[in-house]
Amino acid sequence: MMTVFHEGQPVRLTFAGRTVNACVVLASGNGHSLALEFEALLGGYAGMMPVLWDDEAGAFRDLITQELAENAPSDPKNPGNRPQHRPQNSEGEI
Image (cartoon, rainbow, N blue to C red; front, top):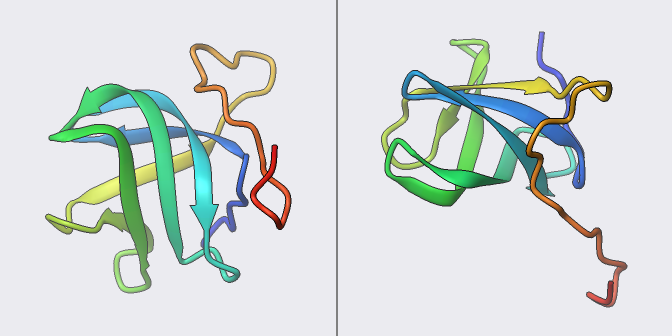
C-alpha cells in the first residue's frame, strides 16, 4: 500500500544501497510523483531526485534509470541531518 507523501514532509530515502534523510519538495496531488531533496551524492543524483510510483512493484522508482527508491517517513524523534526546506505559499513567497 502506498504512503501518500506531502510537500515539506521529511523522509528517509534508500537508493543504490545507501540511506539518507530527505525532504519532499514537490508532490503531485495523488502522491504518485515526488521531487526529493537531500544533502548527498546518491546514485548519480546530486541533492535532488525525481521519483514516480510503480503500482506493479509497489514502490517508487527514480525517473531516469527506473531503479527502486524506497521512501519512508522520517522518525520525528530522530531527524538526523534532514535538509532544511521552507514551504512556500501559493505566490512562491516564503
